[in-house]
Image (cartoon, rainbow over all chains, first blue to last red; front, side, top):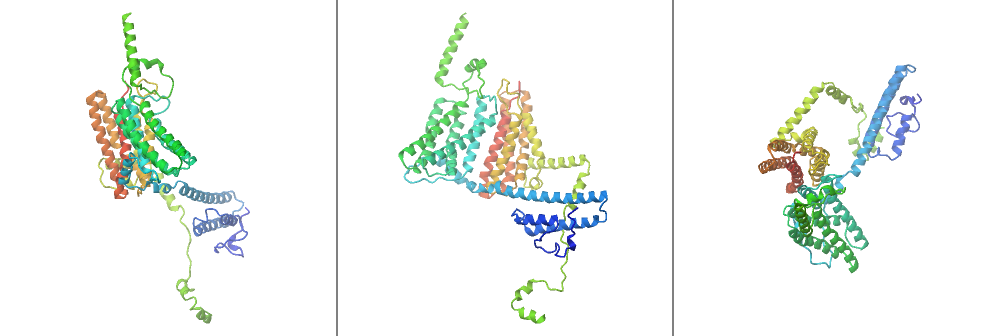
Length: 339
Length: 229
């Protein structure tokens, strides 16, 4: 083995000196390379590192001393290799663990998000109520709170409400799961529409950040939650339309007013706010009709063999069409019975 | 030598306090105790029969079940957390809630994977939320507490199953509603007793709400469970 330079007997010094050595055994070279390559060994406590390596090298040197007498013997070689291999493996494991924990602390650090969750309960309550009150002053930029706790809780609440709605309406998801659909819809809306409006705001030179947009749209879902909660349990179409206009309209007006106050120019304002209003109101409409409890009975007989192989069986029909279908069925039944 | 020392004394007077004088020999053994004790410990529990290991773990899990059913201010759940109990409860609940195939006539019931994912991802999100709000509890401790507090809901599921054997009319629905509501509030209360302590006092409501929502969703899944015809 070529690394057998017994360092204890070298005239230029031994590992007792804590300075970087010149040429020497392979182990010394490794130490040099590590220290000058700027790797994480520097950060993790140089002294500790040196002490460990010192101990390992002295242990290895002791092993080589022991095996000097049994140089050619099979057992001795294997014993040395086992010792050396084990220590190298241990060193590699420690290095890997250090690197991994450093990367983890850097990237998976949830402290990045911590400032956005720094709220008090009464602040959340105030913001919930304010999300339904449009501001009047649009001449100077309105303040938008940049927090993520309220929006996230509202999105999860909406997921729960959607699940309830889907369950009571008997929606059958053929290629997917109820939960997956609900979560995908809600989070997709919140994140997707926020990003899209942020992109439009960037194009229209509106002064709003992504965080503020997420927060604004998230709080705007409060109106949706309320409307859906009421109308999934009380099934009157007219009630839904009234609530859609009033509550949906109020929350849309609030978001629109905030955006207008942060944009200059008529056309950019029109584009931005028109898009947001359309998406927000249409989303509520979609949620209601896609997952709404159907009117019992009549459609069952029609739907049997005619279900197209699509993902969702939406089973609601506006009142007018329902009345027409009713009349048609009655007439067909009368015809059949008369024959 | 003495003169040199005396002349340099005023300059290095401070240093002499901290330097080690020459007549004290500095020697010692810089050795980091690597693994020898750990190896002994590992061998001591590695050699025991499997029955002992399983019984020990089962006893720990059972003790934590007792702590959940009678939530007092004890720190046993937090101190030695383990995830066996949550796993057992989660698998039991998911198996009992499992529906038939999707192609069946009746409405889709939650599949095994759905329930599993809801419970574990819900717990992870609540844990992240409570950590972001400034909680002092660790990640796995929180997962442990949330998982163990599903026990009342699992008991409610068993009771609902038994009640449904008798029939699925209005009476059974009312009974099931009462049972599920009671167990869901018990779960929320039990987990709040452990989790809310680790929060600053004025933010307890912020932590309790997601827990409430989480157990509400699980309780709702149990309540709307209907057996196959």
